[in-house]
Image (cartoon, rainbow, N blue to C red; front, top):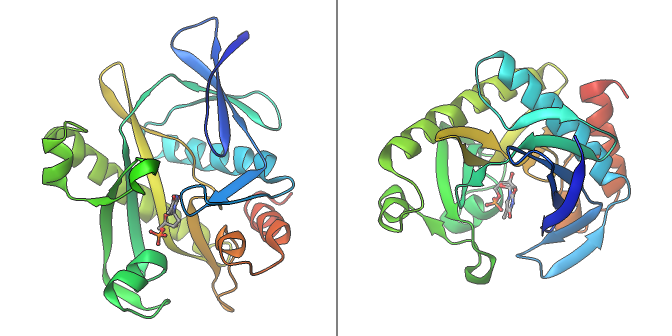
Length: 235
Ligand code: TMP
């Protein structure tokens, strides 16, 4: 497969066309942003770590019947994925209160939730990715009811799988963000699952092994990404 022109540059990835219109190549960057791009920095080695970590999760998820955009890892930072049309929603699952949920509802970070929850944000940086409900998403033609039902089912399957898998390596899955895309009229899992898009806490110490170390200036950001990858992949 031949990489051709750049199609898009996001905050953490670039996307290139290939000679096959069904496939594109994503290239993971070391750039990190937070708060809708207002905070900017670099996390050395992040691109290669997120590429490997996300591909590992996506391949495991395929094995349990979750369809994803993953096709083939090309190199340290590059992966061939299906050329989906992204549904402009950030789908967030939470098991334990943290981040914006804790702030919004006045719940201490670390409080176990009575049930795992799901919420959507409208993917729109200039509006600050506002929280949106299912009626609003359908009204704005972002997705249909059937698509949202499928997205919800898939998101909870991902949660169930990841929660157990990560506990096996001593990590609690606090919350995470997924994005979905349409490929040949099917909803499939897209974007990435990595320390950029999840909260991972050490099971015993609650040490944060994710991008909150960057967002909150907690230090040892690179070390946390490396620690997460080595627990997951033994590298
Ligand atoms: P929040 O508590 O800040 O709403 O974040 C919930 C989860 O979503 C957390 O695991 C981090 C992830 N996330 C992203 O992947 N991208 C984002 O832009 C934001 C705000 C959060």
